[in-house]
Each structure stands twice: as C-alpha cells, then as structure tokens.
Image (tube, rainbow, N blue to C red; front, side, top):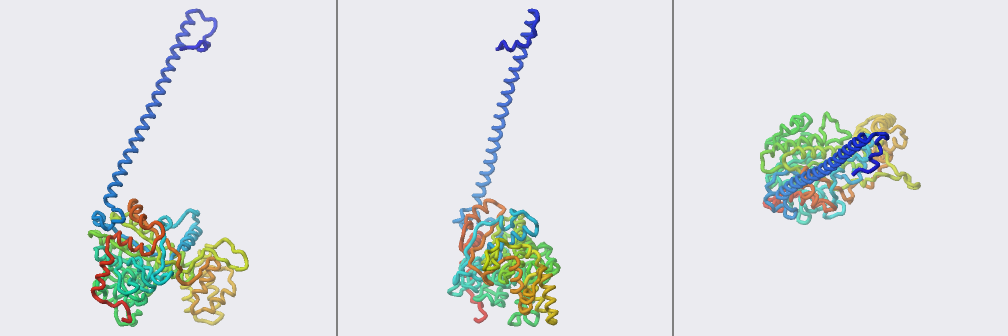
Length: 559
C-alpha cells in the first residue's frame, strides 16, 4: 500500500492525465521492489537451509566412517586386561622397538633441549622428538637397593622381575635364570636384534641375551650371546662395540681363555664385520644375511662428540640399518621383530660428569628415536616404540651455585658446552699419551686441552695446574672445568634413585591411546615396562624360564 509520501516526488504543475501516469509508474516501481525483496528473502532462506543440510550430512558421513573405523579397530584390539587372550590380537603381526637411554634422567633432557635451542638458534618452544612422545615415568629401584645398577635395571625390562645389583637376567634369591623377552620373542617366531654404542656384552644388552650372576663375566656373556645356552642362538643381529670380549689376548682381545669367538661365529654361519667398510656393505640393511655380528670397536664406540664419521657409524645409522634388515628378514614371516636399541654412553658421560659429552649423546639418541618413528610410519606392519632409561646417572643439576657465600645466580651457560669440541675422556687420553718436559706439558694443556679442546679463552694457571697434576687420569679434572664454567652441577659419579621418563610411539592412534597409554601413562615400577612388552608380543616369560632350567649351563666364572 502506497503512502502519500510516495507521491511527493511528482512535479508540480502537471495536468490530470500526467499526474495519473506518474502515480501508475510509481505503483509499478514499488511492486517491482517488493517482488525483489521477497525473492531475496527466499534466496537467503534456501541458502541457509542447503548449507545446514550439507553440514549435517557431511558430519553424519564422517561420524559413520569414524565409527566404522573405530569398530574395526576394536574388533582387532582387545581390552588390555585380556590382551594376550584374544585370538584376533595374537594373530596380528607386529614389531616392537625397545629403546634404552642408559643413565638419562629428566635433567639431561632439559639441558639438551636448551643446548639445542642455543646452538641452532631455535625458539623456546622447539623441543626434542622425545619430548613430543612423553607418556609417563617409572621407579628404578632394584631388589636389594633403592639405587639400581644397569644390570638389575635391564633385567626389570627383560624379565619383568627385580633382581640384585650386578645380576643379569637371574632370580635374586635362587640365582636361577629368568626367561627374558628377547628369548621369548625368538621362540615365538619373531626376528630379534640388539644395537648399542657400548660393548655388546655390557649390562643392558647382556640382560636381553644371557644369564650371569655377575655382569662382569663378559667372557661368558659373549659365549651365551652366540648360542651357548639351553635355548641355542636367540639373537639374529648384534651391532655394537666389545670386540675385546670375543677374542683372546693373542689376537688383540681381552678374554681370559684362548677362545676365538669371532672365528667360531663365522664357522657357525654368522655374517661378521668389524669396521665402517663392512657396515657400509650392508647397504643400509638391504644387503644383510642373518645372523649378523658387527663389532665396531675393541670396547666402546667413541662418544658422539669425538666420533670420526669416516671410522664409525652413528647410532642413527646403525638403527636405520638394523630396522631395515630385521624388517626384510621377517617380511614373509607370521611374526615381526623385536629389537633393543641403546644409547649406551649417555650413562658414561654421567659417570664422568661431562655435560658437553652428554648433550651430544642425548641428541644422537633423539635422532635415533626419530629414525625409529620414521620407520614405524613407513612400515605396513604395526610397529610400536617404547623408550626409557634404566636409571639416572650423575645427579645432574642444570644450574650450579659457584660461591657458597653469595646468593646463587639463576642461569646456566650452554655456550660453554657449544665451545667444547671433545670429551674429557678423549682429551685425558691425549694428555696421558703426551711425553715431554714440564714446560712442554704446560703448553700442551694450555693449547690442546683448554684452548682447542674446551674452547676457553681466559685460561688460568689454576686450571692448567689442576690438569697437569692429574696427567695420568685427568677426565674428572677436565670435565669439572667444563661444568663449572657452564654452571652445571653433579652430585655423584654414580647412579641416583631419580624416577626416569617413559616415551612411546605408534602410528595407529588407537594402539597408542588404548594399548600403550592405558598401561604406561602415569608412574610405574620398572618391571611394568617388561611385563607390558611381553603382553604386547603375546609371549610367556615363565615358560621360557622353565626351558632354561631343563639343562644346566654356566652362569658364573667361579662355577
């Protein structure tokens, strides 16, 4: 309906006919505007309705797909309380990568994270790969002490029981061998391996491949690793150091007997290599014939800070090669593989109180952890990664009060570690080998050790004297200078009772959340790690223990 105001635009002085025509034109224009208004409203309403319907339908489709996926997953994966009883789960092929950061406590992660941010000019929220996969922590005590050693710590993982310090996969009271997860995995059809940066006969790998009353019986450990036990050979792949324990003294080894286990291994069908050329011949795991024994150093592989890449592969390199080799070897099998990978020398740096060496060891381990994740993501076989430490070493404190009489500064200096080019172990060995006059020794310490090795510009005579007076064993004196300058502290050259972190990864989110995290989130006993892994692989450790007791075998050099 038109109002009088609608005709106000009609000019004055028009005759009657012109006025009628003008009013008719105004009415027609008004009707057109009204129709356009109605059409506009209809278009808006239709668009809103269509968008809403599409959104609802799309959401319903996603919900349907998600529910189907979840339903399928739930049919494949049992409730963890009956995990080993579900036939669907038992029949599912899987790989388990177990990684041990020997001696690494929470403070080591904090120190390394800040060191990496400083050296690579990264923002403060740029964290380690390990940090992104933290799920819980565990308590580390052994059967006879609140502070564990590596043998008892590794036995907790391997056998799911606590034993006494120095005991290797053996019951604490009876000294009877306990079946470990690597043995159980091998008997169940899994392919098995171990990769370490220390001697392959050291406490952690020993607990997964041998049984001795004292961890120092490395001659016996080496023999058992090659198959001299009631179960026969259970390890398919071994890469690490420790050639010394496989050779007699007459051939450059350190065995107390005349056995040449390297030659015996070759005779028994092992593929053997002992240098970088041999390692490279494996072609990143594509050219491997199992069983494989790689002993890359007489004792420990050098620290990452000292490692010559033209002589020794990195932990990342050996990890990638081992994973590819084990995957190919188990490709046509019903079962996948179990492998132990250890960043062994984080612990050694802690014992030496050497922060510059330790941050590089932790970074090397973090890269190996990322390599394992990359493998898991690319693998068609379900693969999970569990990473933890056996204990903390050194009582590391990221911050140190230099003067007990003054209030402490709230800082530590990662640039001191960045300027350090070699470990205390490396520099101490060079110093021990030096022959010359007292004056020449002072010059060597000033130039080669303090200036070039530790990157110290303002060298004091006190620093020089502290090193020269300990010429035959200067590791502690050298490391102490680094720690003091960086304001990093230590409370011991041994282990501590600090709880340590647990990390985990699985490509399948359901596996990570409902199988791994449901068991490992929170704080646990170290034995819970081993029991979880046995459940995941669906192996019976007690049955393996029974097999081990059927035939007596040597577990002590004094027996």
